[in-house]
Length: 66
Image (tube, rainbow, N blue to C red; front, side):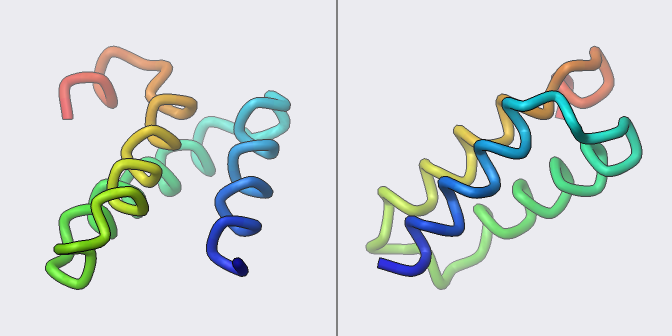
């Protein structure tokens, strides 16, 4: 499924350590906002995957507080 492939690619980029801090911050914010959308009600597996991906870029105390 295409969304699972996107999740895999994004996770790979985050795990690789290739993202700068600004990109991590932007991605973290977007992941949290996206996971909060009502469109994921009933699709808890995708919602949870978005939040799990946020873990990879929550490497600062400020992002962890969010």
